[in-house]
Amino acid sequence: MARLDGKVAIITGGARGQGAAAVRRFVAEGARVLIADVADADGTVLAKELGDAARYCHLDVSVEDEWDAAIEMCSAEFGPVDVLVNNAGVLHFSAIADTRLEDFERVVRINQVGTFLGMRAALRTMPDGGSIINVSSVEGLAGMPLVGAYTASKFAIRGMTKVAALELGERRIRVNSVHPGMIDTQMVHDAAGGPIDMSWVGKRVALNRVGEAGEIASLVLFLASDESSYCTGSEFVADGGATATHSLIG
Image (tube, rainbow, N blue to C red; front, side, top):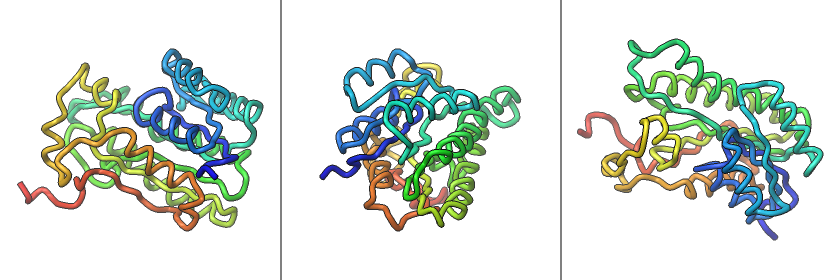
């Protein structure tokens, strides 16, 4: 029996990177998946590749009405949502003193508000025993220069996860946050304004390399499955050892 047999999932930001890796793993393990994203071309291609087990839905996670439409589409195509992966996010590099309010609000609107709207919408149909996985970051555990807006949003996701876990425990709905370190995804290159060499970052962590999207997908799969039945309100870190030390190491 596959690990997600019979389960229905929505994965936001599912057209590329970490999200697409999770979509593929979920389908391979028996789930039916609604791929939700604003990258329509990539999302449509991925859904076609995966066949009847996947559908693509245009979803700007910061827009309340679009969440309602996504839940309706998922229910019509597959049934109630058993698993929600709030993966969609954006990154913005800027010192706090130089950050425009509109840029700060854009990051918070997508990362933080999008996660809130997603949880609230999914809970309207999610059966008891479901799972919500909110993708935060190592920047949801500690700060880093030049990513003030991103860090604020990822700390907020971590906090909302714990509140939701406490509220939903009676329904056996598990809510956990995932905290990736430096993963080579399109989001990083987009924020940097183009392709960048990230190999130097890998040399600063214990495992001496940058992470891959598939490694985060494996962790998300565990939290979506019944294997994590006693895990809720927790932080699951996959960062190559980045948070195992402190700045005095050099």
